[in-house]
Length: 375
Ligand SMILES: Cc1ncc(COP(=O)(O)O)c(C=O)c1O
Image 1 (spheres, rainbow, N blue to C red):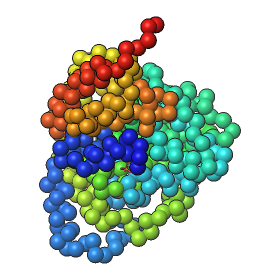
Image 2: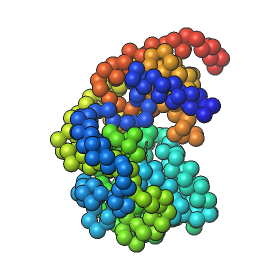
Image 3: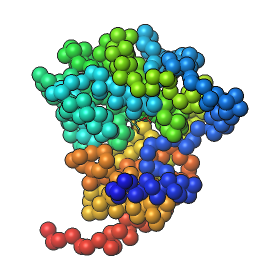
């Protein structure tokens, strides 16, 4: 890894106990004893010595089904939602196919689409309403279109879709016989979130994860749901034939069993932190929030008017202040030079470090930067 962001990750991991990790939308607010007790028991029982049940822990599968409330579809476990996204792209797309998607977006999915020989048609959403609209999705459909990518809420912008919008996009998928890839990684952060599978159960593949809602990103467990025939087609591309990490399953089960007890407090703190980030950004000249409030646990801070590069801001915050945010270039081919992304499911003390560091970093970098040429 020789890129600036590769170096940043290496540095941040080496200093992880000192760094305020606001760079990967991870969740640091789930009561740790919930996970610890379950893992300790599993380790005492030496569960790691044997393979898991390949189809997944039955109680975990039931908990996922109950959590999402989608009838008639059985969840499939994979190594994070990421592995599902890869399998879906390989299984459902062929060379020449097109996927209606957005820019900004979670571009790893776009890369998987390209690996299947297909391409994304990226609709520019870096302008109000900062999300796809049913009208634009409809217009973008052409003879090669095979799939619509609906990430809701959307990483990195934090924008999300109303029930009516999800219904309209699901109906477009149904009417045009397109797959609808509904990535709901950040669902729990959004009030009134609607699942596309409710409206187009035949066409929709739902990708879920416990990385963000349950604070289990390091465990690498998530999955997908689809109707049985479609699920089997995707499952042919499963590489985890012997099952997903047994300790990850134990942790996910413990988290989902107890979620009703702690999710309210996770949301309360996340939203209070979002409001604090907004206050900080409002006090820093030439910076702004395109989307507020976020329906997820991250936001984009537009820094274009500062004339600074997002990489410079990321580096200054990390190396001088121990605050790790993410430069936009990994999230948008067209607008990546305009923003940094900050996530905030963190203890309030991390956000206070950001509150001290961000104004100072912009001030110091601006003083160092050459004056812009006369207009
Ligand atoms: C939109 C989106 N989908 C999927 C993922 C991957 O999640 P997982 O950790 O379950 O692989 C992420 C992670 O940031 C994401 O932002």
